[in-house]
Length: 362
Image 1 (cartoon, one colour):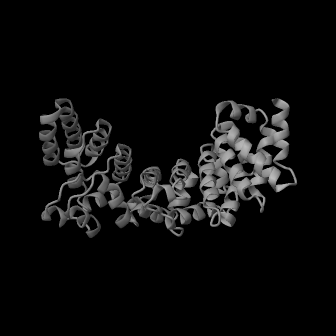
Image 2 (cartoon, one colour):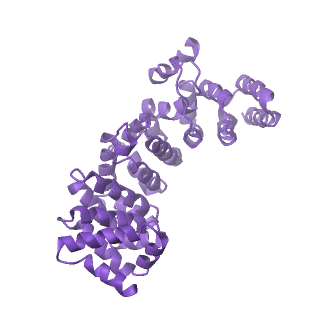
Image 3 (cartoon, helix red, strand yellow):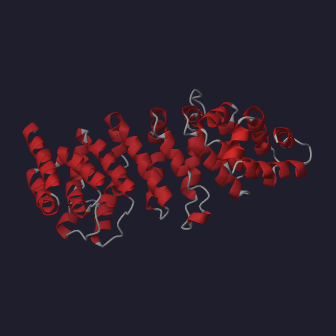
């Protein structure tokens, strides 16, 4: 079996396109189970370069797609992902996607998934950000954001670039990635936020996670965040606003982008992770004086009050309460206290504690 597998890897570099294609299909099948993955991982020194060459070859065709699928499966292993980065897999994936992605959508989708795996490791993030080369730094990211924002599709099966959402979350976990996304001249974060309206949950969750990660820079980037407030606040506040119709008085204290959306009943954001990420981002913004003022200027406390009344997830409730520790006035806190007293005396105690602590420190 070992000799046969070595021979199969050799066939990936055969001069005959038919032989290369058949070998790539077999390798793709092997990467579909744990035994095959282990066998190929043991021969990674030969298998990975051969698959990358096949991926990059102009006449790769179906063999290129099979090679991409194999690399996606192999790169789920962090050690193999790091080795692929060293071999130039990030640059190869981006180059092939730009040149052939339009003609081969299945290949483009696989390449995006490959980049998701490669950006799970630190070296992969650095390679995608092009750290160290100021002339091109951020170019790959800009290309991915452009593809992400122009390819939204109502059918998740046809959404070739939906997994770029996960790449954006990965790269925004590091400061260099956040800086590139938040650079005003590039306008990337503003474009990304626009995808929050997508019906695709993967896109929606990725956008929420990316915004949340970028808000870790709020202490130094608060003005950049607030410069896109008309896009940022709806993305953060609408998921946690509940389903109720807001009164005319409440809406009169909000900007149009919020007031219009809250003038009618809406479908709730069912994914608790999205709601939690939105609240975490709001918390980091309101920790800054300018962010807290901006939050009050859009009637943010009232929105959180109404949303909190409908919330049932305990972790998300905790995220509401954390913001309450910073911004809630006494009457707001007592209103929430009344709701909580009916449902859970423990949480009533917690929010009362937060409100009292805020009053004592102010």
